[in-house]
Image (cartoon, helix red, strand yellow):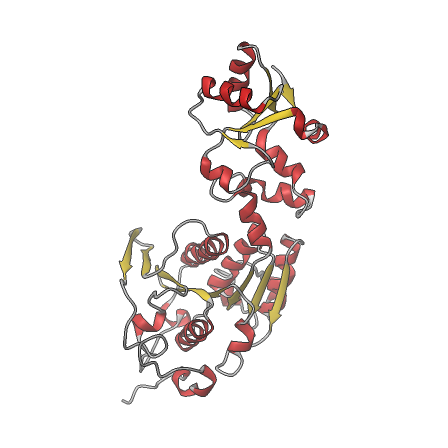
Length: 369
């Protein structure tokens, strides 16, 4: 069987050959070899021969994702009397050798996601240039941070000022026994950059407040709300909505978790749904309890929402809340079809225009009893 390597392909003059990509149209759109013609399956030999005649090229090179399916089509073309070659190891091998914006090690590291039709080399470029802020490096945050770093998000911010305690270790997966007493932010940054030296990690060693949040979130493309403080969740929502920065909220307690995403475009925000910081006693995970694996599931979904937003693929949790009961494994999506006109931050007559001027909105309201 006639075969050609990526290195040999690079040595050929482009005027010498016709390059045919038989992957799906979606895969082609998200990344292909320069000058390749999209000819998605099912394979039509007669139509391809017509294209070859029109091109006037003597050689035809065909490739698929891994270099397996294209062999059959090269064989058919060869049997029909045409000079045809199969690209050895296909588009994946070209990715590993053909992109100059990533190092060879990066190409190998990300190859499994780059061969996804929806993702492609275009998706990896977008991830590398993206800036994502994770607020809270606890149960949800350590999981989200791990998968963002592993995926190759080029610039990751961590907003956290807490230290590591023994009770954190069953669910906050970046930390170990030797880290107890150390800064979560510093330990997280060190371990993320050990995991992936091709990313940058920026530390915001502080808790978010109405006075500092706007300055911190500006410049980020996406914010992940991984905090366990209800007041901070409202603060993140309001600041992101006012700045037009997309974000993903999540919450976990016990065996249950929920996720929702917001971006500009008339979608309901967190305050549209939950209105205001509730009054009275609000148990946290230290009091109500939490299963660490639930944090893993929900934190992974938050990372996935960030990746989808940055790359523009898939469907985000906009105008809906995903809820999972880990005990029964029953999940449901609650649809919120429109934003609230009475919302204090995105409604018609909003009363919150600058979070720094509304500090009382983000204070816990004690029960009057």
